[in-house]
Image 1 (cartoon, rainbow, N blue to C red):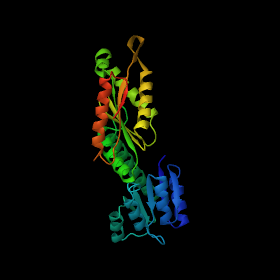
Image 2 (cartoon, rainbow, N blue to C red; image 1 turned 120 degrees about the horizontal axis):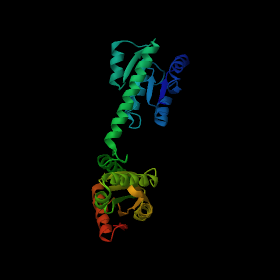
Image 3 (tube, rainbow, N blue to C red; image 1 turned 120 degrees about the vertical axis):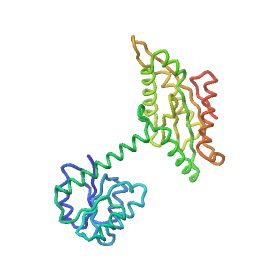
Image 4 (spheres, rainbow, N blue to C red; image 1 turned 30 degrees about the vertical axis):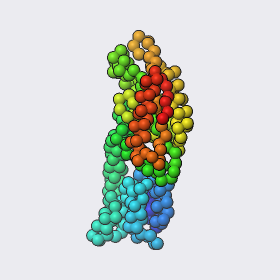
Length: 294
C-alpha cells in the first residue's frame, strides 16, 4: 500500500484528509514544515499533500528544500491550499509541485488526482527499473553498474575507504548451450544470479556484465575479504546442480578474478575492471574453477 504524507498546520484539515484517504493508503501526518522534511527523509512517502500557508516555514519553502535534497527530490507534491490566485499556482509549479488543489476541495476530485499522481509514480519506478536491470536475472545491467560504480569509486576515494571487485565467468558455457540447449543455459545463468544474491551484503552491487559474465563491487572490502567471498561463491556453484531432460543433473563451475581498487593509482573504476578481467583470464588459464587475485 502506498504511503501519503499530509502536511497542514490545521488539525481539522488533516483529519478530513485522513478520513478521505486512509482506506486506500497508509497515512503519515504532521503540522509544520521542518517535521515534514524530516519525515520525508526518514519515511520516503510515495506522495506528499502540502499546505502552503503555515507558520515559520511555508509550503513553498518546504517544497524547495525537499526538491534540493537528492533523497526526497523525486517524491511528488500536491499543494492543497486556500490560495487560488494565479501567482500562487504558478509559484507552486515553479517550486516543483506536481499538482495544485484549492480548498474547499471536492473529495472525488482530490481522490482522482491522488490516484493519478501515484499511477505516474508507479510507472516511473517501473521504467527506471527496466532501464537499470537485466530482464533475465533481475540483477543490475552493465549500463547502470557503470553509473553507480563510478559514483561509489568517487565516494571511496573521497573518504579513503577500501573497495574491491570480483569478476566471474561461467566455465565452458558455450558447451552447456551446445549440449543441452539455450533454455538450460538460461537456467544456469538465472541460478547463478540467485546464488550471487544469496551471498550479497547490503552494500554490495551485483551486475550481469554480459552473457555468462558477472561483476560484484564490494565497498569497504580489501583483496583478502573479496577473495573469501569469491571462494565461497565458487564452492557453492561447484556443489550446485541443475536437473535437465532425462533426469540428468548438470554441474558447472565458475572462474573468478579479484582485485582491490587502488584509489591513489586508478584514475577511475574502469582501470580496476580491466585488472579484475585480467585476473579472471588468469583463472581460466590456471584450469578454471578457481580464484585469482591481482
